[in-house]
Length: 132
Image 1: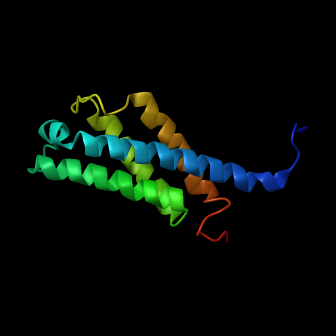
Image 2: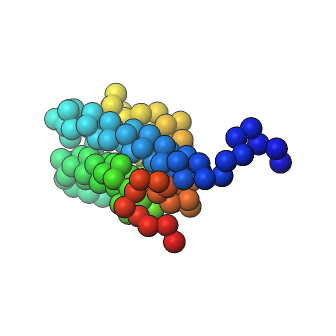
């Protein structure tokens, strides 16, 4: 198939760009959730988990771990797998957690697609993960 840019070595750069953008989005969500922590701990409850403040802390901590993993390029595939799990969880809990800092369904569907792509391809250029 004819390609406009037939330079295959730029594929690693494409994975790097995807990793930086997805990590930046998840870091942004984590920072926004830290800023609104006191409002969110009243709203975010998990039926089987009796401590609502800890539910919020687990959400924020998971977002920050995923963001640091993706931005640094260390354990990228593990971070992408965690992002996939978090996004699927947020698709189910979005209906019960009605807060203005939690993005819409389409955001989490797009994050699932990006995370699965990163899980398959790896970190790309400028990462601590070594390609196998």
